[in-house]
Image 1: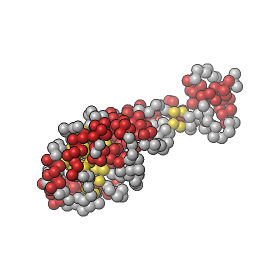
Image 2: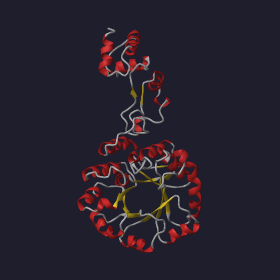
Image 3: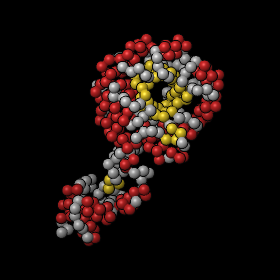
Image 4: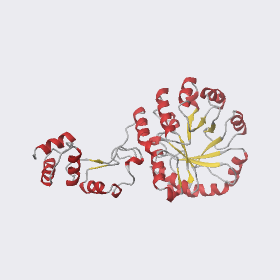
Length: 356
C-alpha cells in the first residue's frame, strides 16, 4: 500500500486569507497541533519568517514534519532562512508564471535547500517537452495548483494521466485543489487514483476564497477506504477534532454543525429509529466510529422524535430505574413541551420525577 504524503498549507492559507493577522503565539499553537498530527510537511510562507522572534517561535514548534518555505521574494530568502534557525529545509517557488528561470533556481539551490519545488497552474497548457524541461532544470517536485478553483473530478484524470506518463525522471508530481465548487476532496481522491502520492491540504480547508482541500476530510476518507485507493496517510486521525477546534477558536472561524468530520452533528441524531439502531450497533448508521477522529462519542439527542429505547438508555445513564410504562409516560410528556425547547438531562430528570 502506497503512502500518500501530506503537506499542510494551513499557515499559507491563513497568510492569504482575511484571517492573516494572528499573533505569533497563536501561530505557534496551530503549528504545534499540525505537527502533532504527523503530517509529512508544513508549508510556511516566507513572510512569517521576516521577524526573527516569530520565525523562531513557529519553527521551534515543529519537531517531526519537514519545513517547506514558500518563497515569494528571493532577495530576502537567505535572511529569512537564517531567522528560522533551521539548517535543513526545502523551498517552493510560488510566484506567478510557469516557466522556471534558471537564475532563480540557481539561487534556491545555492541557498542550501534540500529540495526545490515549483508551483504551476493546472489551467496552463502542458506537453512532454515542458515536463522534460522541468526535469532538466533540476526541479524536485512540481505542484499542480488549481489557482482558479474550477477543476472538476472528471477533469482531473485527463489532466494528470498524460503528465504521469511523460514524467519519466525523478521529479515528483503533487497537487493542490481549491474548494470553491465543494469538490476538492473528490479531486484529490481522483488524483490519487491517477498515481499522485503528494497532496496539499489545510485544516478546516483554511485558505483564500473557499479554501483548500480539508485535511481532516481527505485523511479520514483514506483511512476508511485505503484498500479502494491503494494508499493511506500517516495522519493521526484521532487528533483531528482537537486540532480543528483549535484552529476554529484561534481564527474565530465557527465550524458548521454538518461539516464532515468536525461538525457537532456528525454523531448526533434525534430520530428514534436511528437512535435504536445506533444503540444496537453503531455501524448501522455511522460511516466510522467517533474515536477514529477523536470525537466525544455518539450523541442521542432527546426530543419529541426520540424513541422508547433512547429515552430508557438516557434515564439509565442518569441513574434512574424506569419501567416501560414510565418510559412511555416520559415520552408523552416530552411531546407536550413547547417546540424548540431542549430536553436537557435536568429536564429529563424532572419529567421522570412526575411518573413516580
